[in-house]
Amino acid sequence: MCIIRKCNKNDIKGRAFVHYTSWKETYHNLIPSSYLDKLNLEKLEEIARENIDNTLVAISNNKIVGFLCYLNKARDFSSLNQAVEIVALYVLEAYQGKGIGKRLVDNFITKNYNKKVVLFVLKDNLKAIGFYKYLGFKFTGHKISQKIDSVVLEELEMCLEL
Image 1 (cartoon, one colour):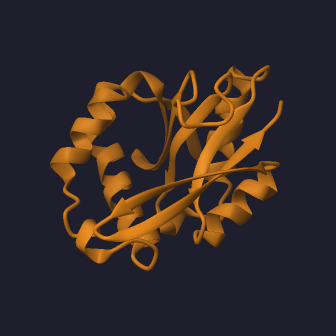
Image 2 (cartoon, rainbow, N blue to C red):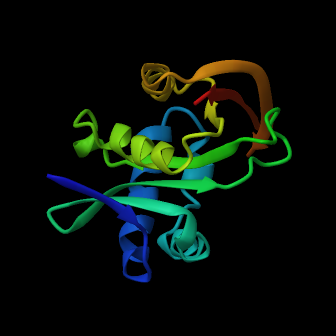
């Protein structure tokens, strides 16, 4: 059984742990290890603290196992500035495939049912792309690039029209 609810101040450490662990599990072959090695829980706790009001958490057995963080207005580099944006969706690897990510997105969509939802996904993150396609997201054709430790990473924009 998994509960989806709004994040609160007692969830900071658990959300940061999911963020940290998910990055290590997901991105070890997708982004430079020099960047991953710089990740630390303190910084991710600070990020969690700054985003309490716009985060949903998934709780299983009194433990945070996933979260979704969003913006009420997509960032300026999005091609869909009237959309809401999912900026982070992470579920611990041991809990993936159990419908938790879908429940997080469904819960988010319920609160934003009349808006477009946009997100960016690394071009090489095929597992995430497959998941988002399963949920009905489609590529917009827009992409952004960022340089991380001398490696240029490309992110693809995907949109779900509600």
